[in-house]
Image: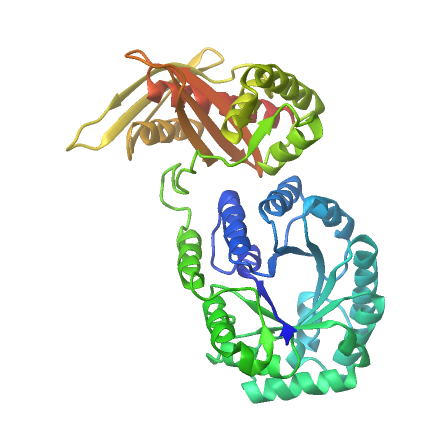
Length: 471
């Protein structure tokens, strides 16, 4: 039986503006869930070659334990080296060269003639193959391309080093049988296709994407692109087909059937959060429990890798300060968990001047009235007031601060922990804000948990302000 890879393109569609609006954290959470679902390949599509884009790739790479992470470099491959570097930490990685091959899309999307596109694809695949062991060429709109030109480009991509070749029925005009014949003819005409993995992407314009994927398997395809969105083959539908008919089709796949439907519902919940809820807590609060334990045996390199995987981009000076604090604490405690490591990061990294200071705050709440927070901040000797309703005291306080700033920062994480016992117990709060993909953490300590949270938020905020005002 041939092994089938299921490639999820949900995040790819988000990158292309396909109707999903996912925060940085949601993207990493979606990728981590796909990994647990044993999806073969998680595709990101084209990511901007910026610091934020690099951090996104590195963060998702750290979240994947078994899935391959695939990033597209477009048709010219000019950013291949940039993303090859970003993918270094991935256990399994793939660079994808993608190009539309129909005459109309080549001219109107890429402003290229056939010969220019052929040269561009060949050079891009060759550049990617020199940087990454696994390279895919993705022929968009392949079913509307000139047949001879399509075959020429596919052969050139294979000769240049593509190990996976995928073709797309982007227009969605074909019936399953037509698509099957199309693939069989390709395999017969392009000699090199027998030595690489053939992948397909099927439009669902006629409601036949899942059926077309089945026909593609019969025609020799071994990779199926699917997603949560109705425009493509359905992730749940493909899983159900493979579960029920794998033996009939002579294929096997790693994805299971029993828990898959439940995981798809979790995925839909993550992706349906539009980010317009009007609250810093729109992404929910992560579980504080951590299975990651650090001991005296952990060196500076392993600690830095874990910190980087959390989304931090720290200076060498900060890394050394964090490791020194870690060694001091570990000599007494013998082991610490991930939560405690993040507290060290918040305490030791980016010690900056307080641009914003808390002048005063008042929170009014009750069982039958909305919670209202009035926060007063001081900056450069001037006071700024913010008033907001919220879903609880902390939420209202954070929203009041956002009113003052006129800016919304993604709340990546929020953790509360008691650090003393008794009537006047001290609470410790960790707040992680994300700006342009980079994580900034702040720590607050107080007997008043709301004050602790506000101080932690301001601590993280001041780090953002300091760094962004230096640029």
